[in-house]
Length: 195
Image 1 (spheres, rainbow, N blue to C red):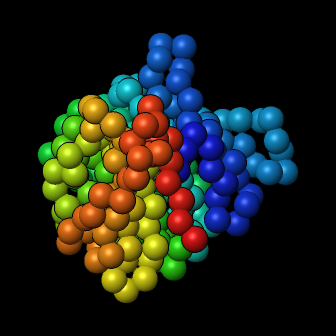
Image 2 (cartoon, rainbow, N blue to C red):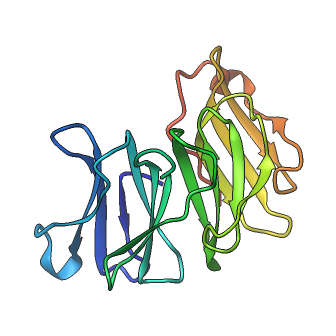
């Protein structure tokens, strides 16, 4: 998750930036030609941008954030520079803060939607989404998934009073707050990672 990602084969670097008007834009360069950037995606609208590689597919990147009304997740085919909106229906102007791909399946990932406070899952590259958990109780800014069977999910964010770290041993069926006093005292969460 973040503002910089490398394609699965390591040949392309992608950066999520703001243009001079403050709108999100994604640029890219090849590893063999560092410093020579071209636009990969410029929606001309929106308020947030992040990039993620699609593990196992060196020709696919995922862009997420908010790229205008109804555009929060975009699949990007590197070889053809083709961008396709694969956002969940109904998010309108909301922001997808987190996206975690399954390292064994480039078509499967889990996302968090900010003000909806939802955890959403797709196994078909965004053709359909299932709600794993609704109303997390905060704007999730950190997400980690241990892709087991069932998948274990960690979600973190600020609930308006303190930082929460929630854990689900069963793909979001239910969550337990595992924050602890030290985390509750933090000002915010940048990311969550699991091994």
